[in-house]
Length: 277
Image (cartoon, rainbow, N blue to C red; front, side, top):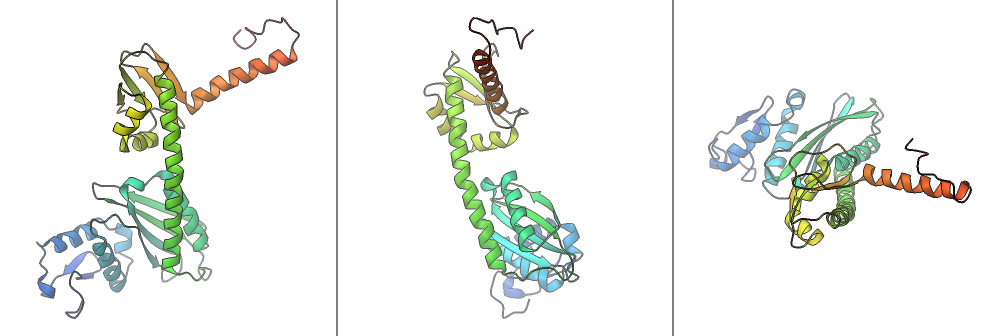
């Protein structure tokens, strides 16, 4: 960039080379210089070979301005031949979930009249997660759009999901409390799938204390294969309560079957072995 541009911005060229020059005294070893180098090192490889110098310059510096702040931002690059639209979405890492990515994908497909979308997610120790979404489009059929409006829609969807997440976490807490109440002992182990493990871990200390006051609950490191919910057991695995969705559904199914049979069959008929052989 030229010397009259504001401090904190540097010129980048395609291929990831940074032209530092004497711009505002910025040096490769400076904090901003290192931050920009990291942005370029982790930038989607395919994009680096297709993006123009000016576009990379604008986007890289926009990412640089985000810094370590918990902010939401969308960057859009439209393919010159209109074969696709490339979207870089930055969200607070703690808010990223697979469901959030799916909801973003749905919005972007509609916004750009896309036929499909590829994605790549970058999760590091940084406060922001990055979702790279490539929306496949038909040349000549990309609708007019406003970047800020698309960004607003994505942000609203994230906020909606966060409210939904709060409701779901409350459900997990209730399932945990119900299971813990059926098992004796001070020490319990709680198992969940990968996504729910992440949700529970974020507020584990306070959540477990509310669910089982005065008891020591440990969140197991290894996830289990379930749609959702929790499985709670004692440390020697001699007692366990399956409050996963599948476990609860199986118990409900047995109850419903029993009620139906009692209503359909004559009074006094033994239904105990009809399903167990």
